[in-house]
Image (cartoon, rainbow, N blue to C red; front, side, top):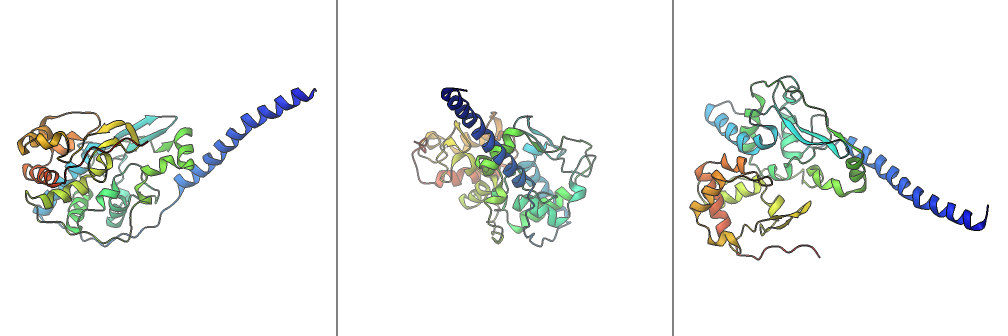
Amino acid sequence: MSKVAKWVGGALAVVVGVPLALFGFFWVRGGAFLAAVHEVPAEPLVLPADATTLSRGAHLAAVYCGDCHADDFGGKMMIEDAAFAMLPAPNLTRGLGGVAGQLDTAGWVRAVRHGVGADGRALFIMPSEYYVNFSREDLAALVAHLAQLPPVDRELPARRFGPVGRTLAGAGPLRGGFPVLRIDHTAPFPEAPPAAATAEYGGYLARTFGCAACHGENLAGGPTQGAPEIPSPNLTPGDALGSWSEADFVDQARTREGEHMPWPALAKMTDEELQALWRFLASLPAQPTNPSPA
């Protein structure tokens, strides 16, 4: 074999071998990450049984859980891509295929507040980094309602990450979708302001609803985290919302539809909650829309 042929063969081996070796490394690393069991504390929670609190829990579940887990809480598929992931939002009831039978009160707390499933694995795109902002009373009301949901028989495919998703989990980019990595698991329960049409209570709603996930920590919008090609509106008075009225905002929340904004969940808020949310947004300092990263 000539020296040129040997050189070409060696170069091809490097060109092909190095990417394959990296893929193999991240594949194994991703599998270990996805299978890891997370030991997190579960704060003691006494579940109420009075009708008023259970009604509050039903309202919270409708607003915060129904968009992903379906209005009957029987779950639905969120992602169906064999190469990336098969990802169900689980059936939360005790029906066929449901997870409620696997969860005691501590298990519900770990799932909702800490982003850890019944098997100890990290939950993916579960907004626990925002639900950790629930007060003890609101979390107790929510869990009490979820624990007694009527059964819905709906079996969904198990969570499975395909070669692309598993490799991205190993390489790092996908890890932003696992809130267990970002939560302060020792943080105490925050106090909720009195439920009223106030900016203070609106701030509590914005924190628990997770507005910052898309609109940025300063709520000034711009490129959406994880999907920069999708612009998020500026929610401060520094852009279009500065010309809106409270009535405009409530009307948009009640009637608007769109693919990327959880309008159906927002529409389930009470008038008082929407007024509070608007008054919080209107109280923010006006800021220019966040720029695209350089």
